[in-house]
Amino acid sequence: MSERSLQHKESFITPILKQNPLFVSILGTCPALAVTKSLEASFGMGLLFTFVVCCSNVLISALRKLIPEEVRTPCYIVIIAAFVTITRMLTEAFLPELYSSLGVFLALLVVNCIVLGRAEAFASKNSVFDSLLDGLGNGVGYTWAICLIGVIREILGTGMITFGKIFTFIPLFRIPILKALDGSFNYSMSVFSLPTGGFIVFGLILAVIAAIEGRKKAKEKIKLQAEMKAAVKGEK
Amino acid sequence: MNTTPYIYTFLLAIISSCLIDNVVLSRFYGICPFIGVSKKVKSAFSMGVAVTFVIILAALICWPLYHFVLLPLQIPFMDILTYILVIASLVQIVGLFIKKFSAPLYQSFGIYLPLITTNCAVLGVVQTNTDTALSFGLSMANAIGTSLGFLLVIVLFSTMRERIEEYNGNKAFKGVPIALISAAILAMAFMGLMGIGAK
Image 1 (spheres, chains in turn blue, red):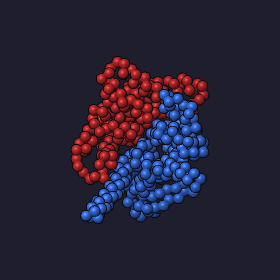
Image 2 (cartoon, helix red, strand yellow; image 1 turned 90 degrees about the horizontal axis):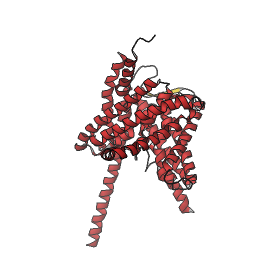
Image 3 (cartoon, chains in turn orange, brown; image 1 turned 90 degrees about the vertical axis):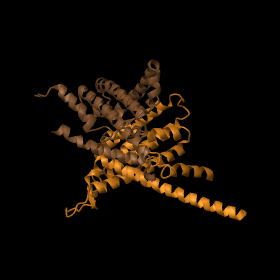
Image 4 (cartoon, one colour; image 1 turned 120 degrees about the vertical axis):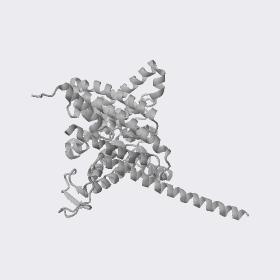
């Protein structure tokens, strides 16, 4: 029992940090650069992504014994495309601002490598509940990753964080950071709202992650060497 | 009413979708192969040619399919499903075709063919063609321009990357991070072309 719950926990936790789909596996980069001009749009994208990946994971894992091995990829694509169509219609009906700000990238969820990758690597081999958790974990991992890019780009590009522009049910308000609301100072750099900024921010984040990983590895190496030395001394 | 000759509009649409509104650097389609398959000039070129081929064929098939099948049947919401199936089968057929007629060609870009199905550039072009209600001529111009733009940028970028790989820089930036930063500089250079269309 405890071993099973451990596995459930694992399939939810791993994709959030250790196997983050965007920062570690570097998958799903197109929407991560295209819709991250603002925090709200990124969050909306993350939410819809989570919904699609959970639904497709659950259905694919439920049908995993029925789908023949040879034609599995077309089957997965059709299932994913069906869920994307549903998501698209719901978004257009209930959150039209989000729909127009995501544009064609909502339809492009079909060819998002993470969704198909999860279907292929996880949902086709594991139980329904595990696949649901895996979908949720990947959704959360992807959402926080693109929200991080979105918040950095929005602060640097427009000088403030705006809420309520896309999720219109919350009142519109702005948090000024680099730019005053009355215009007394303005340190924003509009290049970060442009495509160039997306590449720069994503590249720098990946570099920071690589630096942290490198430092961790170096520390482990030193520790290991010290232990070896101690062991050798002890033997003597 | 419209005095500019059609061919002028057509060529302008090609240039605009190829250079000004470049597929990778300003519309962000196809970043995955752009980062993944750009380490060598040769493989980047093969990938670019294969993508060009599939995009043009897909646009050629999907536009009539949307306007003469989906719209009369009043099921335009089925567009994504239709397009992805067309693209997936197209990629398979192209692969079989090349395998049959030219073995060396198949060897050079056969392995990249399955990757094209999940290249968002293909679905992105087809989807924008019908979403923005372009005419058949202009949607073909969009497809040609976009695919040429992809080919141009992936080859340019792979030549840059071949040099970068040789350079021993900061360890943290090695690989993808420095590739993204140099893509940003390339994007900045392409921003300079924005003036062409506006005049």
